[in-house]
Every structure is written in C-alpha cells, then in structure tokens.
Amino acid sequence: DRPMLRIRRTALEDFLRDAEIAWCEDQGNRSKTSRRSFLRHEILPALDARWPGLADRATAMADLLDLTGALLEEELDRRFGGPSQRCWSRSELRGLPQPLVCAGLHRAALAAAPDLRDELTADQLGLVARAIADDADHPRIWNWPASMDVIVTSRTVALQPRTDAAHPNGDVCDDDSSDADAS
Image (cartoon, rainbow, N blue to C red; front, side):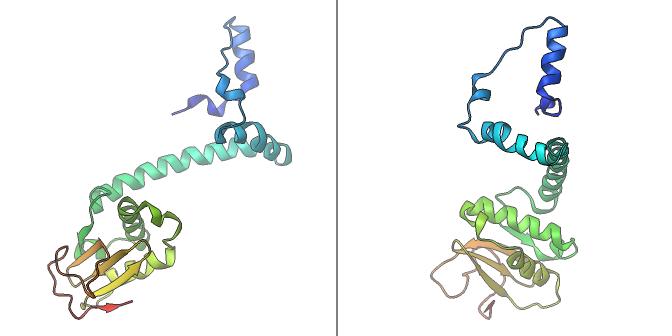
C-alpha cells in the first residue's frame, strides 16, 4: 500500500515544515525516465489542469479497483482453485454467473500462457461460458490463441495446450471426446 498517494505533495511538505521535520527526496521521484515518474510529472499535471480533481478521483478509483480485484481473486480461488488449476467440474461452474466463469477461465489461461493477455477476447470467453451453462452434453473444443484449447464435456471443463492430435486424448478429462466438434 501507498497511503500517502492521496495526499498532495505540497500538503505533505507544509505539514513536515510545520513539524520541523526535514523532507527527504527520493531521487527516483525526480527522474522522468520511469513510467511512474513520467505519469507523475507529465501526464497527471496535464490531466489535473484540464479536469481539476481528476487525479484524486483516479486514485480513489484505483483503490476501489484494488479492493474489488482482491475480492474477485478470493472468489476465483474458492470456485476455480489456484491460477494453475486447469480442469474443473462442469456442474460446479454451470451455476456461476457468466462474468465469474469468464474471469476464472481468463485467469487460468493467462497463468498457462501469458502471451494470451492481448489476444484472448471477451467474446471467446463468453462463448465458452455459455457452453458451460447450456444443456448440451456432447464434447466441444475451442482453439484459443497461443496454442491453448478449451474443452467442455458433459462433466468437465479443461484448458490444455494444443496437441497434434485432432481430438484430446483424455489425459486432462475422463470423458470420451472423440465426437468433439471444433467451434
């Protein structure tokens, strides 16, 4: 946590001066070569000049997003296991809200293949989440980017690296998927 981010630097300097405490400057704060310093010195002042208070609201929103993210991670751990988990009971996922299923699949896919970050779309996640929730019981396979396959069978949902075989070999899931249709 960075509790002082909400307090303007001038207010901190004034407080310390009144308390007769010397201000200690981290030289990294003056440099404009790091992304954080560039944002602090160039971008945030320009945004604040155009829209007063925007930086404060953005900081408050970032704090709220951090809290929300922490809650989401706890729920994903509870429902999906850790980020390295790649196979789940379809019946356990079926009743979950679609956004939670999408978030769990997304987290697991990124843990397996970080290159998916810019390639995996909400549409791709949504297609699989809807398939998990539907009543179809035949196996289905989605070929995701980064050589990742998602397999939804009557009993399981699995993420696995793509193999040269036309259909999964059952190593990840125990359902016969020889009739799987690629989507």
